[in-house]
Length: 120
Image (tube, rainbow, N blue to C red; front, side):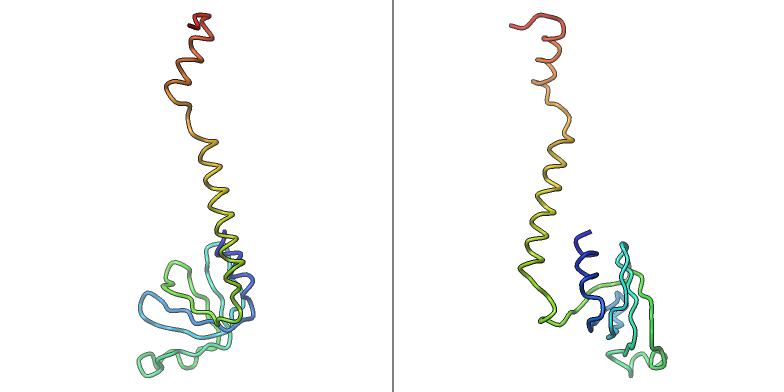
């Protein structure tokens, strides 16, 4: 959810999306969903000679699974905020993993001994 939240803050900004087939599209980010699918408007293709069929396209939907890179303009990215959010998400994930760990063998032995009344 970290990148979804981040890209939502970039709506309305100029982005360049490079796809896995090497097509790079510049445009204004119109929307993004939880699957990191992007909607761009006012697009242009970076290499029009290689992709002449894309010249007439003005708006597009890009499926998240075909995205290789997303380039953003540096002034629109607050790296300190992004690092802090990543740190908080990592800590939250780590806490959830620790809470869902099954009890160890020593804990099980103590619990069984306590239940049977034979604590030594």
